[in-house]
Amino acid sequence: MDQSYFQNAPNLFRTLYKSGMDNILDRTGQKFGISVTGIMGVNCSSYMEIYERNNSFTTILTLTMFRILNMVDEKGKEILKNIVVNPTLDREHVKKELSKNIKSKSEKLKEIEIEQSKNRKNKETTFNKIKQICNTTPKITQQKISITQRITIKELLIDSSVENILNNEKEILLILDNAKIHHAEDVKIASKILNIELMYLPEYSPDLQPIEDLWKIIKSVAYLKDYENLDELIWIVTEEFYNHVSSSSLYGGWIDEFMRN
Image (tube, rainbow, N blue to C red; front, side, top):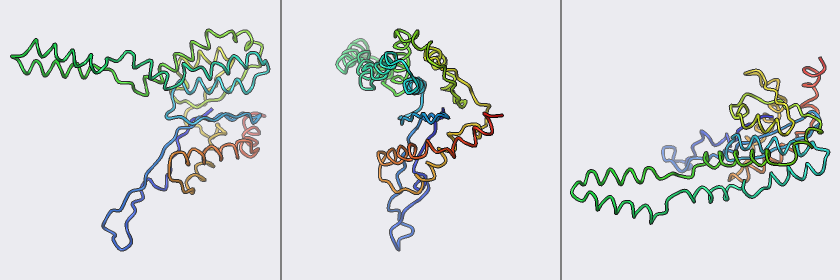
């Protein structure tokens, strides 16, 4: 399993000018970036997902999906599918739940009014108190959303009745690079539940990871494509991934060199 980042490289450093007006800036090219998680097994089973950013939650989600793709027991497969589509993992649902812990605008204003009434003669104290009230109001960040999703999916896996079924499934050996999120404790817990053994590559050894060649192919195609927005970039990356992921040229040599010796 590997994670990669894509962007429209041709526009990164290109500045466009109107004809005959070399010193007058017309516009700079926009850049779009996407994070991609990919799994490529020697049996050509594969799973790819595109995220706003890579994190422990998306890694656990990917592991769960890969287990679903390689399961025999239909009952267990259905249980895991229900976990993946559980509404409590939905980003908007998580945002809504987190917002319940944030003070409303009226509550904030009320606190400010109270502080003003307490310190009418000391404007500096009033200002500092108001500033403190505003700064202590928590924000719903992507990190908080991801942490909540990670905790939720781990709890769903632990509470599920799929563990005994998974113990009877063939163990999956999954090769990963050394991204920090791959070493997260929650990822290791989830992999154990899913009966997936994680094997980490040595540092700085992309040649040992066959999917790196796939990213190289996709990026070479994306670099030459002309696209206007993020959706078009996602479509290009997705299409090229599934066009090439089953190509024997990507994993044939890797098997000969690293698996048969």
